[in-house]
Length: 320
Length: 181
Image (cartoon, rainbow over all chains, first blue to last red; front, side, top):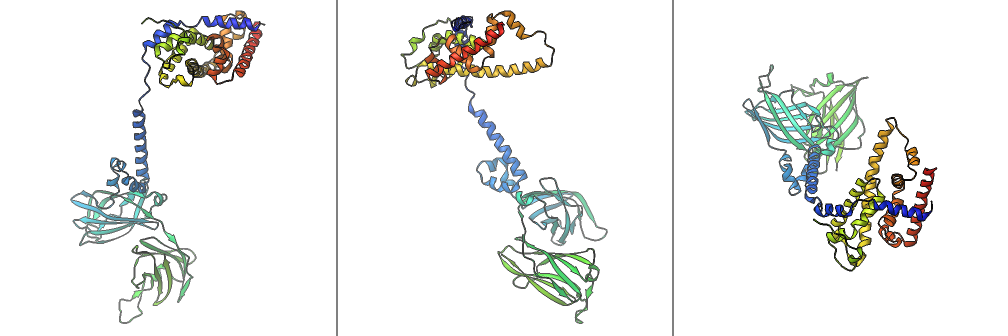
């Protein structure tokens, strides 16, 4: 087959194409389809962006403060309301529980509450949950049963709350009216929420160990946050049983003094220790965890004073 | 509406172009082009309509100072053909996959040989050519464009266009001879 023949075959083949007049009628009879207006796509983009921002705001509460500053977005998502972490309250069974303030760092989560009418404690079953659904239990608590002010300490929030911030919810199902045994309990359900920033601890170089009498103390961890100083010590030569007793050194003090004292003193010599926990471990080693509160007033020099049976040694902690 | 056809030459002098002018001047050639680009009349009609509609939607972008209406139009038509071929290929891939799952009742190679290069066979062989070859042949022999105009529509130099058309023809001829044996 020659090229000329093939070319003619192709031209003839094209003759069998569609009827041009019908095509024209069809084309001109149809209004050209308008390009889809851009606004629905834009609207969907806005909706998708808002959903994304909402998810970030929920799981990364620290971002909420940023969102709240964004005009429109902050209002649209209610972020401004959510970042109000103080003043949330719940009422049940005639008792109102208000979350006055909250603080979290790498060592603990502390909630300041107020009950009206006043109660002695919140129930031991109280727990907080974070935005990932994880629960943290109460480890300590203090209260003023006359005023109704309560300070409840919970376990430290886990990763990644320190990076994302935490959206916590405190659930209380029982209030203890007087702190007596058996407790006079008020049952109900109180749920209050807050958004917290989580302060990460700054570890410092460990001071040298010290010996007082028969007891030897080796520092294993020392860190601070804007509100807390945490000290961990391994103790040998003494146990929680022996240190739990009182030591009567001064005859003028018939009550006596604790056998063991680990204190944190601020630059003015004021004792700021909040709690001491002693766990007896293996091979005669007891672990002592000391937690002290500090005001976030910048750097400073703190003294760690270890006292055993009336004798003590000091170590210095410098907060920058 | 009564459609009338006019000559493409009447458009080259004007600086603006209306949908009616466009259709009346080029519909016939677009239909012939579509006939070579597709395997059946229905697909050809769809392609011709789609190409013209696309050109009408793009009328605002036509600037007579930047080139002829024909060059502008055939670029749009060639692109429409390419897009349609892509869609058809996707569909064909699905059909081939489906066919692989079911027993084949006849051998298409034998059908082609029996048809002895009839129009249907020629359509089939055209459709089997690479899209670029098919577009070249459809513009040259379907739409009746000069080699230079084909090159203008496809962004090729006249020399390259001429060689490309010859190569496309040679490939088609080789397949025809192979089928006839």
